[in-house]
Image 1 (tube, rainbow, N blue to C red):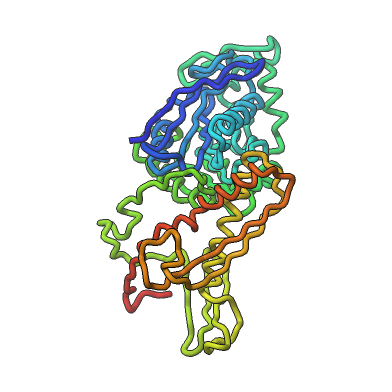
Image 2 (cartoon, helix red, strand yellow):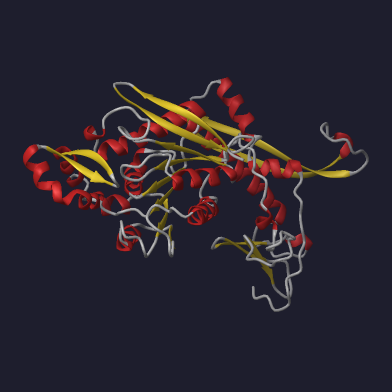
Amino acid sequence: MPRSERLMIPREGGAALAARLDLPDSGEPSAYALFAHCFTCSKDLHAVRRIGSALAERGVGVLAVDFTGLGRSEGAFEDTSFSTTVQDLVDAAAFLEAERGEGPQLLVGHSLGGAAVLAAAERVPSSRAVATIAAPCDPAHVRRLFVDAEDEITTRGEARVDIGGRPFTVRREFLDDLESHDAMHDRIARLGRALLVFHSPQDRAVGVEQARHIFQAARHPKSFVSLDGADHLLSDAGDARYVADVLAAWAGRYLCPSPDATPPAASDAAKGGAAGDGSAYADPTVRVQIGKSGFRTQMSARGFGVAADEPRSVGGTESGPTPYDLLGMALGACTAMTVRMYADRKGLPLDAVEVDVAHAKVHATDCQACETGGARLDRLTRTLRFEGDLDDDARAKLAEIADKCPVHRTIEGGADVVTELAPPDASP
């Protein structure tokens, strides 16, 4: 079961925010997410708790906060606005990075919280993906909740309104602030992050047309998932679990694993068929095809294509890198990305990374880290060059982080390669 920590996020000159951090049962999270709850709700809404817990089960740490004046956070609700909600998210992201060494890569927002994460994303540099759940495109959509009191708010400066069976004081400044966010379409268009939009066609609180506006304004990569039959608050536990399952699978494509993360155990479903026996034939992550003759091979991964070949000395046409070249490229690319990610998070002045990888066969007796003798084995020699105003300690730390690159760990640990025969009628 995931574990949770209760936190208070202090802010200089501002109200402290109450937060809950859901974490995997053991080890460090593969990445962090920041969850924004709906208007006048709190981090303890059932849907927020269920989704946070389910993501933690899949290795993602989730920080959910109570906005100012709500839940257990300090401050008064009547002093808040959509802008202060966005600032709460920015401050929570900065706190997470300061305390955990990593900012949130995934921003998730429910209802008005969805509009808030869309607005906050450009101010959270660590964010790589954004997901909205039952969110309005326009924050002013919430005005309908107190439309009958707008005249009083305008003339008296504030009014007491009933929202979800609870009384709240809404001030004129709140309405004025909503009007200042009327360019959300432009903000969504320049989001610069992968986007996933969840919405129920039966949502009576926020119509599904709002999801259409968000989706049409956004640029690719973007995805839409229909929550058929779900209500606005995802009060059914199955709906919340479904959102978490889809969200975790989708986000996995965009989140960059932390160098210190402990990989979560694979679920039975992820290992193969419905029974977890590995017998189901599924669409591969990488597809490789070779013709009737020669060694030239066409490969594709997630829509990107590349060719491999062998040198002419062994019968190839020298029209592409060899398989071992590709292995070295994978190690080098993963190394450079891991080092870059760490340097960015720590604010190190790293201007560039260059990685050379050489492959050779060596005798086991020449390998200091090997126990087998007499045989020949593969050695990958990786040479690192860092450009930037870095001292010796920083360079040593970056070299240490390079050893935590996931591809390095896979090679060093030895992967379990399972060979399956596809049915003869399985289309490529």
